[in-house]
Each structure stands twice: as structure tokens, then as C-alpha cells.
Amino acid sequence: MADIIGDTEAIIQEALGKKRILLEGAQGLLLSIDHGTYPFVTSADCSLNGLARNAGVEKSDLAFTLAVTKAPYMTRVGHGPF
Image (cartoon, rainbow, N blue to C red; front, side, top):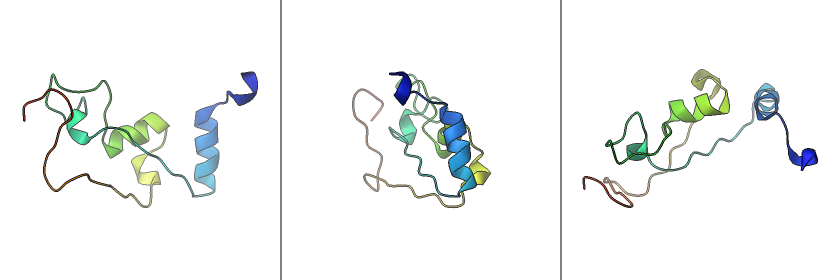
């Protein structure tokens, strides 16, 4: 597996130099450990800030962001307050 393991931070920093990267987050904001409805949350920050931080980039490095929503109202999969 050594040939497919790499330094992801270096790869992302190199891609930032070319100004074209795509980051895709998982789960919704209301599952975020920082913004969600505790204790019904995941262990990570699912916001744009969390996505950038976990990828090792500054949010200010991202010139364009696009959010895709599932519905114009709050929804939840699994247990939770609504």
C-alpha cells in the first residue's frame, strides 16, 4: 500500500498553488459538534470552517464556496430533537 499512501497536506497545498481544489464535506451542519443539537452530533465540525481546518487550509484561501441543501427546512436522519 506504500505506493498509494501520501502526505495529504502537501498534496492540498500544491493544489492550492494551482488555485483549483474541490473539498466535499459529509453530514449536515446540525450534526456538527460545534453547531449541532448536542448530544445528537458527530465528532467533527461539519461547517465550512471545519472542512477547511480539517483539510489544512485557511477558509480565506477558498475563493468560491457552494453549499448544496437537501430541503428548505430542517431534517434529521436518526435520533434527535425534531
